[in-house]
Image 1 (cartoon, rainbow, N blue to C red):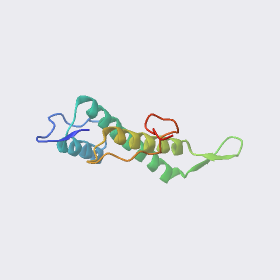
Image 2: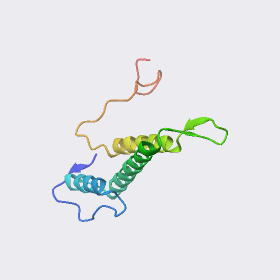
Image 3: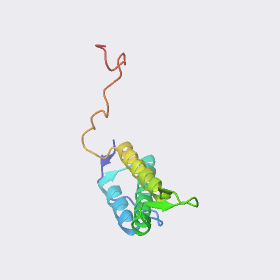
Length: 119
C-alpha cells in the first residue's frame, strides 16, 4: 500500500490528461509516496477516467442508441467505451489501494480453499 507523502512528486502529470484529471493526478502524487509502478497505475486510472468522460459527452450529444443500416436500434458504441472505462478505473484504483484500511473481500472464499480451513 502506498505511504502518505512528505513532499510533492517532482514529476508533473502527463500532458494529455484533461485539466481536472491532471489536477487530481498531481494531488494524489502529492498526498502519497508512490513507487514508479504506482505512478503508472495512477496514470492509467486517470486515462480511463478521461476516456469515460469523453464517452459520456458523446452519449449526451448522440443518445445511448443508434439505428444501424438495417434500421435496427442498437446501443451506441460509446456505451461500451464508457462501461469499460468505468471498470478499468475502478480496478486500477483498487490496485492502487489508496484507502487507509484494507477493503473487505469482494466475495467469500470457495469451499475447500486454503483460506477456509473449516470446509
